[in-house]
Length: 193
Image: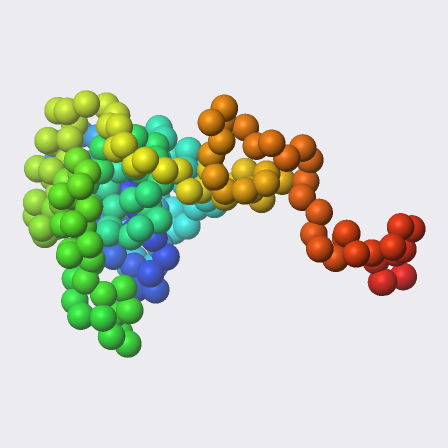
């Protein structure tokens, strides 16, 4: 079984999360990987890297038994779309110059009221939360009701709109022309010649 730990890109890292997850992996005899960002703590049990390309992070999330993360919208959304069990440890503190990430606990509490994810109130609770998730289902249907990244991706690849059509396809064939392309006279160059 493996963990995927992710702390995002916050300039101060998240040492408490990385250290608690590494300690839990050791005590629970789990393998795994940690994206540690700017954290100073370097894991002893988990393999780690500071940052990952988006595709690699998505693949590691999809392969993980449990995702351990902070309360960032990006990592939570990726883990939920992948159907992975999640335990989150919120960053805490008032939003300010030294702490632009702010306190993530209110957001996580609201999210946990809507979806089956676990919140570790402090680093000491992380190991127990991971153990509880390991005893549960391997995947979770979060019933998100929308997949905005997929819809936007389809639009950018040439779809006509960001709506889903009844049959799952878009009625526009090929890429949508821009206004400038429609107004350019036939045979005219790009203007950069």
